[in-house]
Structures are given as structure tokens and as C-alpha cells.
Image (cartoon, helix red, strand yellow):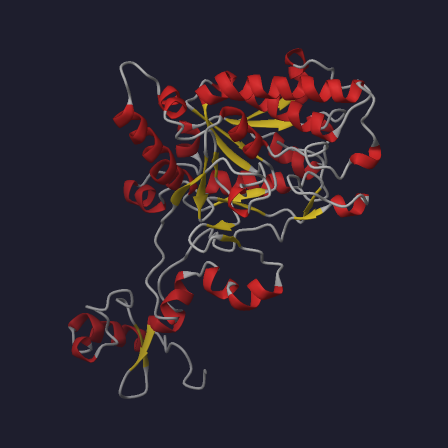
Length: 409
């Protein structure tokens, strides 16, 4: 879902999506100039929903329009789906909650039109990991589909299994909650930042090696969220920024629920007791879809830890689910505080730059071709006399490749 914000977040999201799913080594080995994103597009359909009521795509700024013009993006406007809504999107007497309900209702219908087994709804102020597609399939979708396959009765579909056994209503791909520690990772809190942040935060491979840690490996876990009250810390989800639904849940549960919410909100507005001074009430102008959908279906949620998707927005007027003050400025959520410090886009290579060279007994430096292999490194004394090491030293000396200066720290 895209809207007019001060920063073109959608550009970052699309670029991480399209550039993060290629197996570069395989492409190089096959000597094929396969463009980035081909694996993603072979499995998915990318839809953009413009939720600005009076702003068509071609009236956005030039930076965003360049992204909107990409041929693989399917563009939709929320007004195209007013036929599914009980109140016209241009009608007066609206509320922020009603807008959000109708935004999600339009998104749900787009999911059904895509005719795919899974539906991922994301806000534009998010980014994904470098291996997002692979991780999503291996750590989220595959375990859920395996669960459905082993618990299926007769000709049940996956969605029917999830519903009968109350396995999963929605999966949050973002969460600032640490299930092992049993608390929210509040990066803005002085106590957390000074005591726990350093332990929790993601670390690049170069840093991990310097600290004596193992190389980073892709590892994500699914944690269930029982049906708890919204003010319970354990019930915190992903604030609706990255929600994965099974398509059967969208058709049979999500759309009917959103239609009921829309009718209820319309009745509340028409009833005349909607007042501007009630904007601070939870459930009046906010919408915590993850929590409300779980309560509606009576089926637990799941969340992924660490997050496969992270928030990058600085502020967001849609920051909902928690009680706020009556002042309008207090309604602005500083969402760079609402982040998962464990999120890592790409770990990088597991070595440090200085280890690419080693110093010989004569004081000269040699490039170490085998710096990533402890069994072959020319910097190890038992391997220094290997022919390949001596030939490489002679070549570097002939071409004046001396390596780092002895004066470097």
C-alpha cells in the first residue's frame, strides 16, 4: 500500500524485493545474464495499491513515478474497489479507522484476483532481507504447508486444516518482540539500549569473525501468539506492516470480517457520536488488524523472529493499537523506534580485509589467495613454502604489488 509521504519509501522496498532473490553464484556458473528479480516474479505477482483517495498514480512526484512505471508492477487505486464497500470512498463523515478498513478490504480483493495460494500485505515503509524469498519459503511457508499435509483429513485444503486445528490465522513477518527473553525490544528505552541492545543487534560477518563468533546463518523461527488481550506485551504483533495470509483465510474469514467492521464503523459515524476529541481511544481511530483478525477467527497468530521484514519509516500517522494522548502531535508514532535490531539485510563475507594479506619473514607482504581457508592459507607457516604461495609472491613482487604499508595500524 502506497500513499503520499515525505520520503519515497516505496522505492527502497521495490529495490530490495527485486535485487534480493538472485543466486549470483548460480548465475555466474551458468554464464547467464539473468536479470535480478526473475525468481521473485516467477513465484509472485506484485501489486501496488494507491490509498490516496484523490491522488492518481501519475500525480505523484517524479521519484515515485519512475518506480510505478516498472512493467512488472500491477497498479490499483482504492477507488476501483468501492463496489465492494458500503460507503463511497469520497463520502463525507469519514474516520481514519474506516479508511484503513477499506484499504485492507481493497487489498484482500486484489489478493483474491491474483489467484495465488498465499497473500502478503505490506506497507511501503518496509524493507526485506537479502534472501527474503528463500527464507520465506524455507522457514515460514514450507513448515506451514508440511503441517497441513501431515494433518489433512480427506480432501481438506491447507486453509481448512489451519482453521480446524486453529494453527494460524495470520503470520507477522515483522516483530519487535523477543520470545526467548519474553519482552519487547524497545530501542528507544535507555535501559534496553545500554544493557541489551548490543547483545541483540545483528552483526555483520566481518564483525562476527573479529569477535570470535560463528559465521552468520539464516535461521528464523515461527512463534505462536495465543488469544490474549491487546495490552499484554506477549500479544504484540507487527503493527500490520507485513502480514502473510493463506488465500482461503482471505476469502472465507478476512473479507467477511472487514465488511462487518466497515458496517460497524459506518453505523458509529452515522450515529453521530463520532467526535474529534475521541481520537485517542483505541479501537476508534486505530486498527490493529493482526490482533482483531485473530480474535475474530478465534485462531492464534504466528510471528517470525527475527523479522524477515523491517520498518524503515521515521514517522507514521497510522501507528495504531496503543492508547495515545488527545493531542494530534501525540498521535505521530516515531517508528524508527519501532524496529527489530536483529534484522540483517546481508551478512557479508566472513573475513576481515587485513587477512587478505600476510607478512613474510623478510618484511614483505603477500596476497593470500586462500585467506578464507584455514587449511590452505599461505599465511600459515606450514603452507608458506607451497609452490602456489611462492609463485604468487614472485608475481606480486614483479608487479610491485606490495600490499599494505608496514606503517599501517
